[in-house]
Length: 325
Image 1 (cartoon, rainbow, N blue to C red):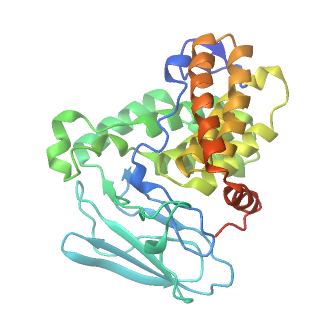
Image 2: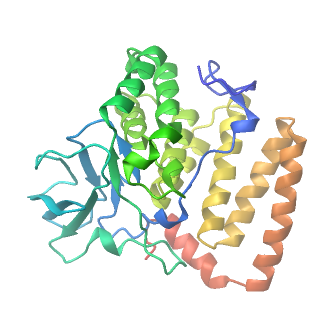
Image 3: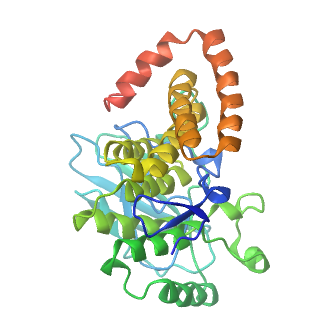
């Protein structure tokens, strides 16, 4: 069970502790992207740890594209190159070694590349999107813990969510960091997000829908900086709310949308969702978080007024329609 103390979630079987209610989010700001629909931006693996040495590689489907070129490279150069008509492929190149960062590059036959990925109102392109396979020692511990949490995760929604929570919050032990060649200041931002995403997307494919599933998927995508996918799942979480029993997920989804729009410099939209989240916190009896959010709202009001950003508002409306570029 996802133990986080005190408030019962929409599922009724998972408890939430407000101390951990704020998701890990986009822990590495430089990963922010996943907005421009004309770019085959990376989905999974993206700034992640992996259990498998033959991972599924997945990227954004670009309209009108008939073929993608896929490359996986390591510190010593190209490991594998292939072409495919779909938006995913299983790695089938030279054996990938554990503990070494690998990069994935996808190009379209319309001359667009995943390396062109960038978030709105930001000049910096995403970086540190490499994936790293866990060494046998760490992988064995992860698999053992996963088996304890849920031997058959897809048999129930609660089991899948518990395991996804474990994968999404996994962090390499401090004692092994030097063996993984990851930047000392960002190693904690790498987790098993791909494993968690695959698990929850399997639930959806099996017809399972709930505000909690979509909210957690939003958290996972936001954790790796995928703005469009995170936004889509947070909005689905809000739209699928059935009643007061889902108020917690509604509140957290509103809060996370506020985080997204704040990160991409849309203060008016961030203000809208933070204000909704504050109402939710008050309803849930969390006056401390409501007060903290009120102070953030006041700062955003000043930003929105000072910017007079009509362009941002129009851009946001197009973005919500999936037409942002």
